[in-house]
Length: 332
Image (cartoon, rainbow, N blue to C red; front, side):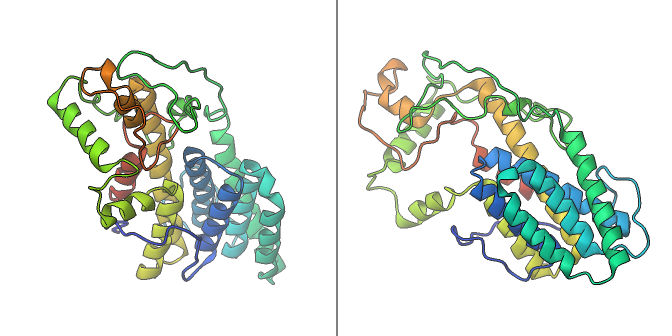
């Protein structure tokens, strides 16, 4: 089956549901909970992946249409898919985002109330909880909670705190988190950034300086709109795209379970691999390169230049491009 083989741009704000089944409903619950808790984009993708692996495995324990990620056991006959999905999502979300427990529990109770058959409800809850417990156990100790020190660089090309926050880069340990599907985080390490004294580097930096500046007169409206679209976290954007694909293709529960698991495994591993390369090369951001342009010999110092957006994170390689490419690869 083809998944996400065309890039689409959708509304930037608001988590609007299209036709929802239990899988897409809990995807929206996950999106809202992660956003409300203030999870950073890489952490969000880990949350999405764990939730949807649990849902996928619970569904395929009821009816084995696809190979499970973790859970080999089968559900009792007649187990409710609604209860199984709700239990898998509820248990993973409460473990991963305890601050949102009240709203998650409310949604969970409402989902179980829809299942009138007590035996079917109990069977679904049991298999959903089993799927959640297993993936949570597998991810326990994956390095996502590690504490790693970081020191700024001062040589040309090395990352240091950047305006406006002037804060240390986020999640310096994320490149060492155990991937979900990759053999290791450096399996697809990108090539180094261009040499500071190369024509390639000079051309790229000049383009950013001229078009990417906050007050640029060369950037057209379409370019500005595209830039604003990518302000949003990758996990939120790509899960909304996946919900739209689900609606367009009228996917059933099992196809949705598989698609959302694959999309979010790709997103999570994309961020892990991306951060491994980011901290491997520790490359400075354009705002530093332009404002301190005198130290690498490329530019006259421009102390007041500001871009449209600057994160507290290394510029290279691009996290948005990395996650986009990981998702757009056709799952097999």
